[in-house]
Length: 106
Image: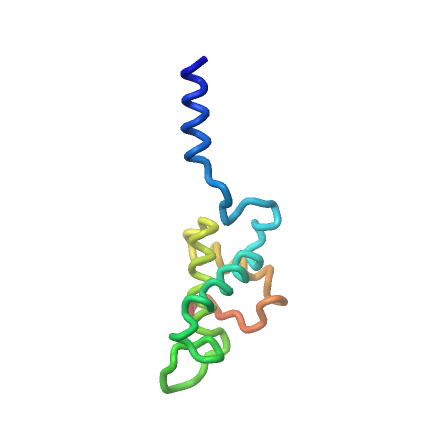
């Protein structure tokens, strides 16, 4: 009996309280991307300009630098290890992400 209580206590300590992907709706790639993008904007606020890009000369991209970083973090958080798999999944969200970059630009 005591051994079972110790095992349950250890398990309860190791259990994650609030994982990032917990509820069913968090399997939506766009939802996770939006949450990670908000976090990236908070951390990179002093590094990026108002359009979400690192200041540099040249053409301003439609899909900002901070969005590329958030997209990469989203794919890592969801366990998507293939670029082709990522862009197959992203094709479902073209209406929500109109400025989405192509795979060759990623």
